Length: 218
Image 1 (spheres, rainbow, N blue to C red):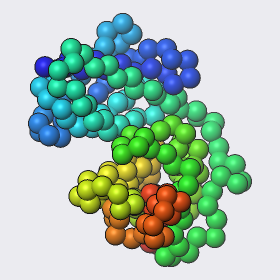
Image 2 (image 1 turned 90 degrees about the vertical axis):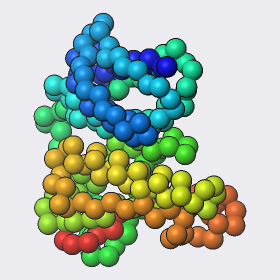
Image 3 (image 1 turned 120 degrees about the horizontal axis):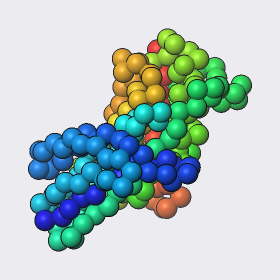
C-alpha cells in the first residue's frame, strides 16, 4: 500500500497554498476528493501501480490538470507537488503573441510544447507557446481548432496511440481551464499513423514526435 501525499505550491515563491483536489484513479476506477492547507497535505492510499488524473484548484490561481503514472507498488509514501500559476489580471497579449493569417486546414506545429519522455505530464516550459495559442483563440472568437498528438513508431502502437491522445487532451484542458469554450476545441491522438517524415533515423523520428493544431473554422 502506497500513501500518496499531495501539496500545492506557488510556482514562483514555492509558498504552500490552500487547494482543492479532484483525483481520478484510472486503472482502479476510483475517485478521491479533498483539500490541503499549509502544513496539512491531502493524503490518500493506493494499492497498486496506477495512472492518476489530478485536478487542482486554488483561489487566485489557474486550475491545473496533471496526469501521473505512479509506478510504485511497495513505497511507503509518494509525494507530489502541484506547482500553481498565479492569475495576472492585467496580463495582455503582445502583438507578436498570436498566430496570424490562419486559414481553414492550416496545420501549425507547436514546437515549444514539452512533455517528459513517454509521459503526458505537461512541462511548464510549454506555457509561453500555449499562451500564444490561447491569445490567438481569444483574438479570433470564431476560430475552431483540432489539437493533435503524434508519435514516432518506436514501441507498442497501442501505447503510442494512448500517449498521443492524452497529450492532446491535456493541452485542450489547459485552454479550457483558461476560458476557451470547449465547443471550439477538438483533440485527437494519431499515434504513428501520420508521420511527418520517414522513421528511418533519430532526426526524422524527432520530427514525428509532435503536437500540432489544425484550423477547422475561422
